[in-house]
Length: 81
Image (cartoon, rainbow, N blue to C red):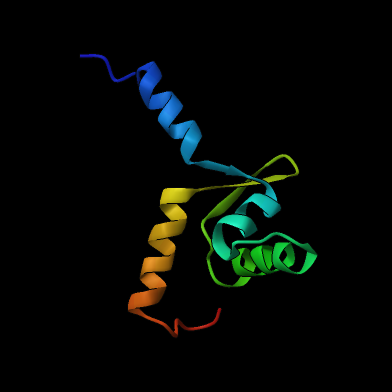
C-alpha cells in the first residue's frame, strides 16, 4: 500500500492553500488592505486563526479557515487569551 499522495491530491492541496496576509484577508473579509491584513495577524496572534509562516510569508488552508469560522459560529464569544 502506498501512503504517498498522487498528483491529484497534491494539486487539490495547492488549491486549498492561501498565500500571504492579503490573500487570507481577501478570503476572510472579501477585501485586502493594510487594515484587514493587520487584522489577519491580530486574529492569528490573539484568536488562534489557523495560519502558519514559512520564512517571512504567512499561509493558511481554506479548509482550516472554514473550520475556524464554523467553530466561532457555534461559540461566538470564545475566551480571549
